[in-house]
Image (cartoon, rainbow, N blue to C red; front, top):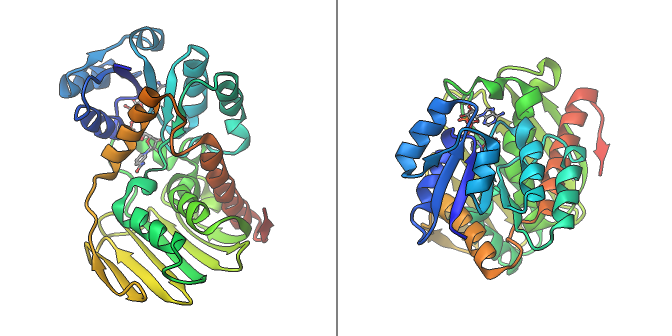
Length: 317
Ligand SMILES: NC(=O)c1ccc[n+]([C@@H]2O[C@H](COP(=O)([O-])OP(=O)(O)OC[C@H]3O[C@@H](n4cnc5c(N)ncnc54)[C@H](O)[C@@H]3O)[C@@H](O)[C@H]2O)c1
């Protein structure tokens, strides 16, 4: 596995390419509808720019799909059919139904790695919190709060404002937190939510979702593009034996109370960890840590939140 071909040469593709360069024997190729974007990313990453997706497929062993989210499925399916390992940015698709063609193409080629950028699993704060919860260190989880957001994604990335392309905040941002909750605390059975975007379908968006988990715990997820502050993320997980708390805007450390008393500060870069896992899974011939099924389950919760916000009703999963 030597070359990862990027479809899309935007902000996230450049982050991934930068981290891939830290791994030995990996180079980068890029295709973008904007030849200028592909050229400048190629210059930045020391890779090659391709004039078409077909050329990118020809020159790559694996494909990373980092386009606007509504385009993920068509590129991922084409790459899998061409026999390439695939990394798809989150949200894997804008709906669970939209992911079916990827699941089918992946099932037809089980030897290929197919994974999704649920990068929270590589954020050291979240990873450590996951481990502590799984080890029973906060006891029986009861009340969970997660928050994520900032202003509308910046200049030149106007597609985020068209929710038919980005999905709005529950699908675009909430999907990170929904994935974390499913991974750490188990299945969600009911969702009640409200959002600005459910009514407008475009522009700025803000959403609140309350989830009931099969365990009986309740989670509250805030997703926003209507925050005047710099981008931030936070969590607070409370259980019978203690709680874990982190807010990127106020503290670099995770604070623990109760059995997990103290402060700790893990420091691995999540985007490096994610790319390393993609390449290592390919090299070791094993499935990647985040499977398609996980990513689709997170989208399903996000869709339920959007449906609840649109209808005003509770949605059962
Ligand atoms: N994991 C994270 O934290 C995170 C953060 C931001 C974005 N993302 C995801 O990454 C993906 C890309 O987001 P971004 O912020 O890099 O967006 P961006 O707008 O910076 O980049 C998208 C690129 O795709 C190109 N593009 C558009 N249509 C195309 C097509 N048909 N074929 C090929 N290229 C095309 C654009 O020209 C642009 O260069 C989205 O799915 C987004 O949700 C993830």
